[in-house]
Each structure stands twice: as C-alpha cells, then as structure tokens.
Amino acid sequence: MAEAVPVRCPACLRENGYTAPVFPCACGSPVHPPLDLAAPPVPLTHRTWSDTWVTVRCTTCGRESEWPHPELGCGSCGTVVLIPVHPLEATGTSAGPAGGSPATARPDRDSTGPGPAGGPTGGSGGATDGRPAHIPPPPAPPVPRPAFRPVTIRTARDAVATAALYLRWLGFRDVRQPDGRPIPAATVDLRAPGLVAQVDPTTAPAGLRAVECVWLNGLTASATSVYFALAGYTEDARARADDLGIPLFVMDLTGMPQPVNDPADALVGPDA
Image 1 (cartoon, rainbow, N blue to C red):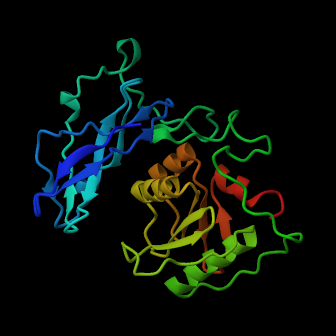
Image 2 (cartoon, rainbow, N blue to C red):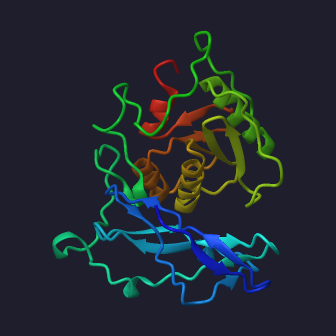
Image 3 (spheres, helix red, strand yellow):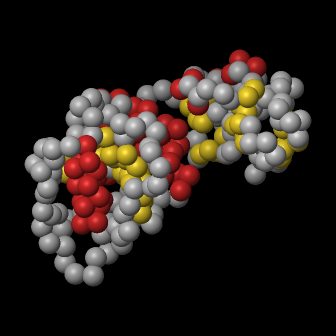
C-alpha cells in the first residue's frame, strides 16, 4: 500500500496527508499514478474532462491505461487541488516484458483473458454458473420471478422509473436515486446495496467514457455496475463493457429492457 505524503494547500498553506490510489492493471499488478511532489499542487477551480484523467503505465507489463487524476480536498479551507503527476516519458519504465510494446489489442466477447484497465472478462475465471466472477448475483427473490411488466416510456423520468422497476424485478432491493442533481444532468444514477446503475435516457448512443465511469463508480463502491440506455451503445463502448464485464441493457419505448452483452445475460439469468 502506498504511503501517505504531505501536500500543502496553496490557499491556506495547511499540510494534508495524501495517499495515492492504487488500481488493478489488466495483468493483475497494482498501479498508481507517479506523483510529482516537487511541483506545487494546482487549485481546481473549473473541472474539465482532461483534468479528470491521467495516463499511467504499469511497471510490470507496460500497459498504459487512463485512471482518475489524483486530487485532494483541503481539510481546513476546503480547496480542491490537483496533484501533479510525472508524464509517462519521465517515469523510466520499460515498454513491456522482454522489450515488447504494451498490449493494445482488445479481446472479443469470448476472450478468457483480462480486459484493459484491470477489468476481467467472463470465461474460465468466472463462476461455475456462467456469471463473471466479479459480478455478484442479485439477492435471490423470495418467490419465483414473475414476468416483467413493462411501462411505456414517454419521458426521461419514465426511463429512469423503468430501469428501477427492472432492477427490483431482478432481485435488487431498495433501488433509489441518490439525493441531488446528477452530473451530467442527462444521465441518472440508481443505487442499491451492492449495485451502481447508470440510466441514459438521451437519444445519442452511450459512449466509451460513460461505460468506464460507471465501472469506476462500481469499483469504488465494491458493487455491481449496470448501464441502461435508450439509444444503445457505440462500438467502443460495447467492446469496453465486454472487457470489464459491465452488463449493458437497451430499453425501447415499450419499456422492456433487453440485455445486449454476455454479462447482462448472466445477470438476468435463466428465469427471464
């Protein structure tokens, strides 16, 4: 585990202890952003997408992946700062084992190897019932599951309500929307014990970043990540979801969610 380092707040000059997060590489090795403690932290006054992510190279296999940029909230004045990170060319790590280049090929849906950015896929390492090993089954319902009764979707609120009903039908309990307005406003979070779900009621296909974000939210909460979309998914988003084992569902206007990848089929199970 990485040791805590002192980070001085540029606003109030208080020193705060900070421990760099550790993420799982696809090869199984822990990776963490290489902090540049010689550079001063930068106050975060306006969040952009480029500020949110940083490219980190695994020192074991050489794979380059994008992870959340290290940031810290001052415990005294509340200022949020970005902690500088060494660029890749300054880390001094090798390109990969035996001088090879980092792995860039994306496995297909039937691959049994690990996916990029640390997400295992379904395969020989999954549970014996065909469910990917890192996706826990939903709580078993007390009675055999009846047929799902769809609700016609006319508004974005209908889409969110339909996704919540479907998750309850799968067996998840206490499905709710967190307090406060979601960011971005076009997508809506749903939470339940052991579950993090994202509902996209827009007319544009969900993209790669949307799938990665819901996976990171689930990873942080040690929960199953699920995505619902009205307009489907881009090709890159579906490939990444398969790599990471994220169940994807698409909803039509009749209100009937349909699984679109193997993890979703495994989550629904044979009773659907």
